Length: 402
Image (tube, rainbow, N blue to C red; front, side):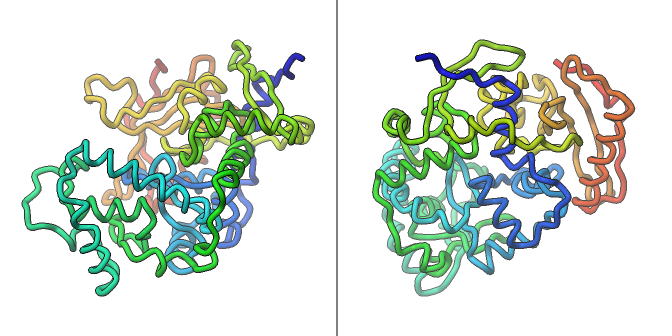
């Protein structure tokens, strides 16, 4: 029996809808709406780079221009509606999903012990009980409160002191939680004092975890291979996802062929039958230009983004400046259902300026007057969001892509 063909435009629209980019961008958000938005996305990645604004704030602002960072702080630090832990990286996650992290914590314990032994995290295991006792009796701590007195010449994970490694291990394995951040540094406390009790009581079975992870990933990806389902949350194995796909072919899951960008060769994938049968009802994303964080979930799987949108994107933070194709931290641009280019910019806060250093449009994308106006409107929205007073463009900022 042949698999149904999902046209590229349909697959892109499914993906954009699942990633919250088909939502009305001007609807007033509020705390309840922000909670729902994070839940719809599944999680929001956290990253420390702050050339314009931090990744999690830009991800949410790209979906709703009424988003305010203070709302996220309330949901995380006051209401316990969200918590911070690990997917494929550090992320903000709905607390309602916390039970599905409990089996993950058990897996992480064994994996991280072995991994960090190989990285020569000498002495951290001996500090675990000591660190827990310090927090239990003395309250929340930051890594700097537990330093071992050694002067550090570097700041990377390779030079963590044993107490810092112990903190990260206890956080990644569920004993501790992030109570808040100060200057972007994590403040750790006992998980029982941070995560609401109603979310800590239940522990799903292994089968329930796999079912939740695969269905949740497929909701948000639209179409996906079993490997993409496993990678979405990072909490199950590819083999578990592959078994789940096969076992649920008579339970609302179907095999499809997904056309690549520009009519590229179709590739086998899985989809929810109900979603495929209602493709004609999919909402169209707003046509305006929006700036995406390099860590936006639309771009997280670079190979998938390139296959669906024909857009090749790489972060060049760790590429020597002379070898960069575009720039240190370049932001993709989405217009409706297309990724149309990338922009290099920085918020110079002391000067009150959002400075555009470079703009590259994809081949075949013309910088029409309408597109110029749409980009200018988006940059002005970002200017207000960051608190800058003006937008400035370097000479020759419009460059040739590629």
